Image (tube, rainbow, N blue to C red; front, side):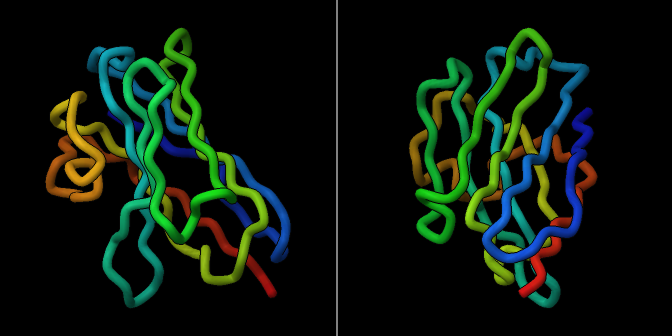
Length: 126
């Protein structure tokens, strides 16, 4: 199970950190991804962090502004969002990848994730 938290309302240019607490599987050996879905749009890949924490991939739309980290002792993955823009407004989901050793392209597909959190709303006002 994955439980996301920390969403909210923030002004453009601001920062927000969302968390995702995991249980029921071996978190430390899992690659964890973040996706988002804006109103009327398909869910899109935001980024992923591999099990060791040193390898991360991001979508072009968030690269340089968002950062993913993890605390394997707490079974928690974080998404730090800086320089937020109104177009970042979406429901943010955490998910566990089926295969921890996947390629960059592998992690972009939501079909390659088996466990999903319930999502947390992030709203950026202009």
